[in-house]
Image 1: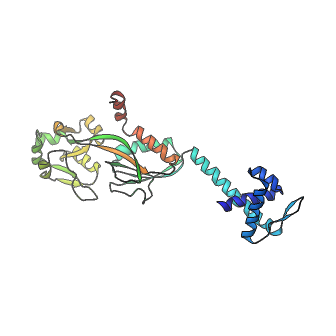
Image 2: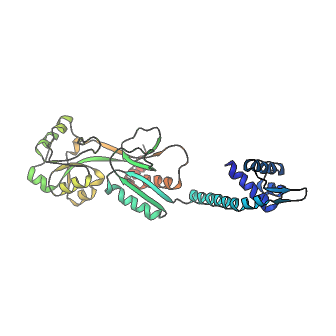
Image 3: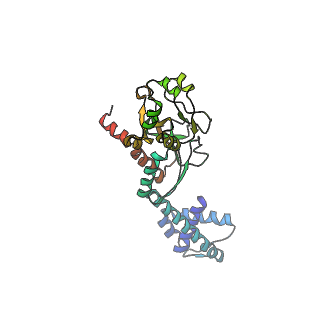
Length: 302
């Protein structure tokens, strides 16, 4: 930065042909300008100006150096202008890691793209635990809290787990009245990609351990599709089955026994300057992702 400052001083002296005039433009004394030029000449081992009591003129070497110096100063000014515009208008690439819950996120992301067309979304859908800092993500959305002192975090909302199946399935296999009744049903399970373990259901532990396994997969869509087709009971987040419940394609069971809920968080590298593109994304998704939670908070602030 000191070299760039010296270049700027040199260009102003060359253009004004005066240490005094250059100092006036830069807001420093003529003496400071002269010392800066002297240090530059010492470093470059060449004389840049002919000095007299009446004038300052470029040497042949100085004239050659001025051509390149002007380009460097112009590039610096252009870069500063570009950064200034970025600070005022959200734009650029935004790299996000998101969980495999497309039914929840895609409508919000689409709305965000329409609102901010100058922001390029780079989306990585995965349920694995990512290293936000090391892998270069601007932000991640996850269920549950990630303990990492390098990250800042904001809660986005809460959801519940539901046990669901189709009316046709229950007509054939019967309705479970107690959690232990699940032991005689076809159960569609989710497997965690990191550990390979099955996701526990929100039922007593001794029942969960013994639950039958009719199908295992690693996404929501498959379990939702198969349960609508009457192939079994599954455990799904409430946001993923709203339409199917409203249409009567699915119904919930054992509601009085299912109490597990979870939170969604957005996390991003803490410290330093938050770019406009990240700031508007955090605000946007916080407002849009769980609007029913926000409405409830307004009605019941306590």
